[in-house]
Length: 108
Image (cartoon, rainbow, N blue to C red; front, top):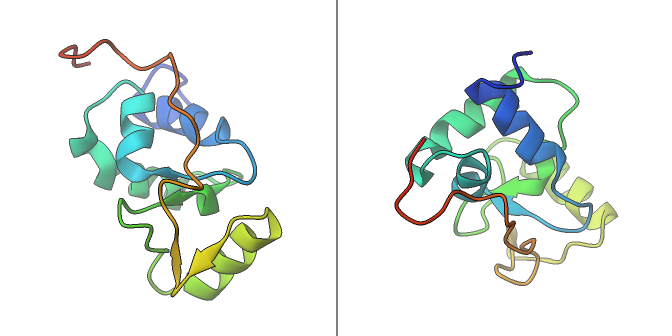
């Protein structure tokens, strides 16, 4: 995997999400150095790259992966993440913002 490319940077950002916390697809995109508009592409990376803690990534509304809700919820609960009505309670479970994010207005 190319660590400098989009896939590698997204993989690194997802791998850095600590157990018991979540990030949104848009937050992962920003952590990887891109805009929130790359959030759908983050989902594509999670489908392709094995071994990533994909369950720590949710939509901006806290929704779980469609079709995998039961497994997603099981993995999150195992890490202590609370769910209500099939969603993660944001911002409670959200990880703290990283200092690795690009300065405001800088796009890569």
